[in-house]
Image 1 (cartoon, rainbow, N blue to C red):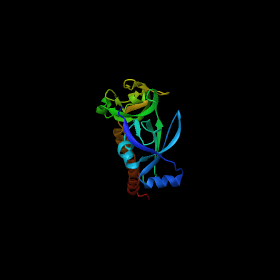
Image 2: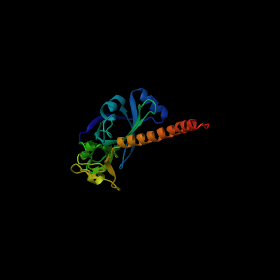
Image 3: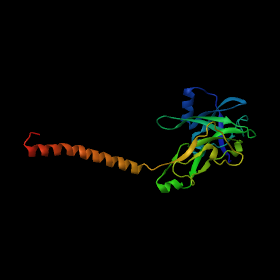
Image 4: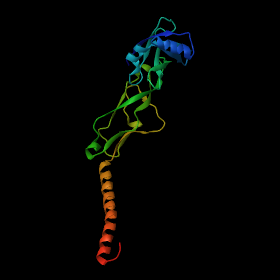
Length: 222
């Protein structure tokens, strides 16, 4: 996996007021923590983070560049990014330190490839899961995992246990859920139902007219 270098610095001020002042300078407050280290308040450049990290898909290794000796060359994953509910701006970033020699569990996006056989019969490819958990070394984290749907007919499905894993990567799951399936066509069923409803409606409308005509011919009031 390709590493991303990110400049970070330590911060001493805490609280919402300090965070707002930091953001006004173009920085984003964050925290760096791990299983063997106490949480360390840090800051990152907003433009730098947005350009190199914010829009990436999946998990990526971040190697710190910092004037602070304790942060220099530390390696982490982005654990959480908090955004402003209205503007979408980045408010806070959590970085989780990783040991490059220890396997860990991460979530990886799924990419569906191929044209399912069932599509030729009017079926619709329906993804059920967009990501899955895997276990591997940090350096083996895949950017995404491909799921080939070519062989799927209508009602067929690919389950988690069926997904081909990259080398040195293991799927993690308790229930063998379906990842993607091919649904039967629904357009024709809708047309048939609509046509049937139209016939019923026409019949209901025609009945009063027929009764009125018969009453007129017999001289009886309708």
